[in-house]
Amino acid sequence: MAYNIMIVDDSKPMRLVIKKTLKASGFKVGEVFEASNGREALSILREEWVDLVLTDYNMPDMNGLELVDEMKKDDLLKAMPAVMITTEGSRQRVDKFMEMGAAGYIKKPFTPEEIRGTLSKIMGETDDGQEDYENGDEGLDF
Image 1 (cartoon, helix red, strand yellow):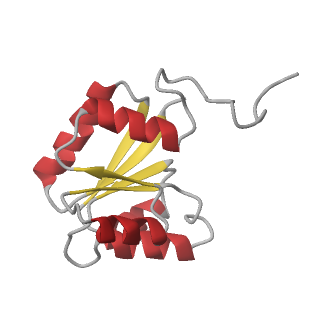
Image 2 (spheres, helix red, strand yellow; image 1 turned 90 degrees about the vertical axis):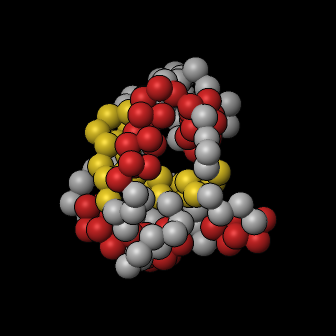
């Protein structure tokens, strides 16, 4: 299964780097949507089918933490995993991301292997792209 992904970062070059790294990682990527801030992302998320959000923290208008907070208040978006991709590295900041409902955290700079490993775990797949059924029998037909 390929996943539709929203990349939220105020830097267009960084969005391109994330997109290229996603594709290089081997993670199954469907359509990729882009937004330059949280407000723009929310607008797109309410119109398009997105499986996973990758968001920077520091952005104008609405930052990544505010985006995650708004997603958690919305009945349609609250179950959608959001992953922070940022240079913010303090333990306190990472803990705040997770408390607010982020599904994970990737520190810049990152490698394709880090992206794939983190996203595969969040989406319930093994690192080889197969669904991970160790924690239950959902999807099994017997």
